[in-house]
Image 1 (spheres, helix red, strand yellow):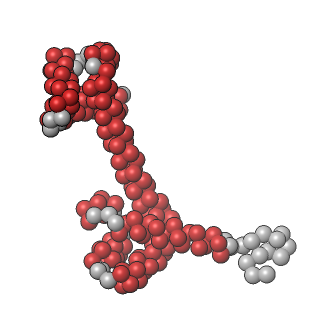
Image 2: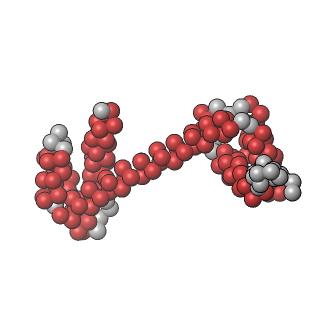
Image 3: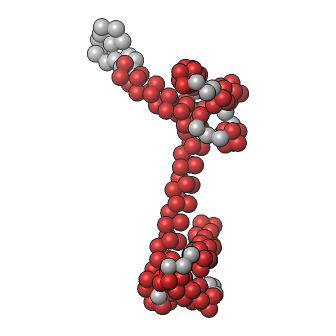
Length: 180
């Protein structure tokens, strides 16, 4: 049998399924690269030939021609060293992690704003205990204005201002914990 050591029975090369799986992973990496803006591609530090090919795929308007170009890009990626591919994957994964962190920070800010608008002084006291550097009076006024806006179905100007204030306050807290 081809690809199998007759004495030990071990396979000498990856199976066709493994080869297909690797090729599909490379193809998805190529698609991810093509979806990146040009400025981000320059930050990734692609080899020159790959960078030019990614740009060529991005410029191709026709669906079939784009698919063919993408296949060629994947072929070029398969020829690259594993270190280059891992470097590209690492940079793209760090982008995903950063986006998740930013989304989580926005969700925390939104949760605090909702708590302040629903619970009122109880939540405000808890926020001020956690962040003693916050301006107590301005926060209290913003919460009062935002609650009134919500009750009267007015445009959420104070609610937005409260969100910005909380984002700045909670963002400073995350920056302090990240540095230490």
